[in-house]
Image (cartoon, rainbow, N blue to C red; front, side):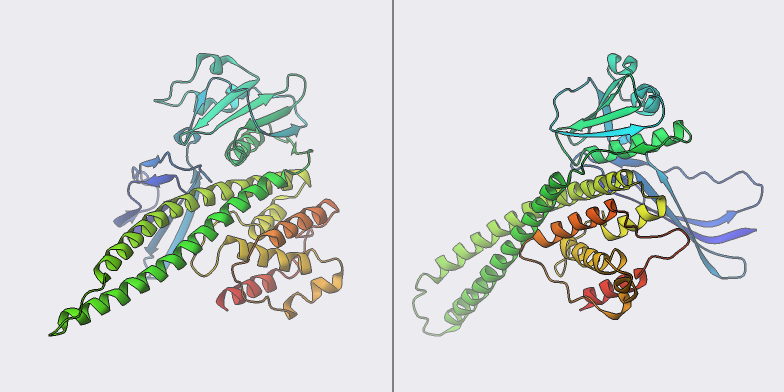
Length: 401
């Protein structure tokens, strides 16, 4: 059969970008024919940390019966696009240690694709070293992986907490592929304070943008008022003296231009802080899953409550959405009694507004980790998540309000 009107859409997370994100195919033949090959180029910017290497392709097409259909697939982009191997770095402020139940695997073999990436010359010592490997992101931060000689223990260290995420994720996934049956665990206290620092920084940027927005609105109103007064005087047959209104107009315009430049700078800083918070959130979710031995489904649900998608709009931001989700989670899904879970659909969350601080959010994250450490789970084997549908409906209702 032949599919007609096939439309491909490609997407990926920053700093990755695709040179052509939409491809139209007039017809696509199926069957045992040679597969159609479509070359696509992915590249990466060097301004922010990568939050994910996943790329998504969505195909929209029409069947021979004229029915519209959609197909979706995803794949991982090469790690070498966003980092390179450098000589081992010893100094580090943040450290995470992962334990396994398997003899240690040689780091050069685990990251062979990065060491021998085309166009990236790795240090000769890095190619032969078996217990230490350092990576540097295009945006600057570096991460070092140290391997214990006597046990299957891997330490990741860096001067940047959020930079640990992608290499920790890659290490866990590569270990699971290379060593079937390996169990990766995290036995140290969760680095919540380091994560809370990322939340504080992101929220500070949001407050700064809010203050700038209010100042811009006030100056714009002043600029319009002065303009109106000047126009009235210019139209008057016997105009009165300007009384320095022209100077006030010029000064207000300069203030507007300065505030606009500050707003652009703050928006860029917020984008970087959002990427860092996304990395930190995914790292915490990974460590929580390893620390409390969550299965894949529970780990997936954890990511839906403590979401790594950090997106802020004029109406609501990541902090209030996450706090609303965690409030529902702690009250019902991880409630202290079965009665709490059964009443999940009876109470709606209040409207979400930007909070004055993030103390409540930090407390909810801490309580969630505490209840998980005591055996609490989002999903029990063979049972749906208590109150999951109600949580989604309540959050949607709060967002709409």
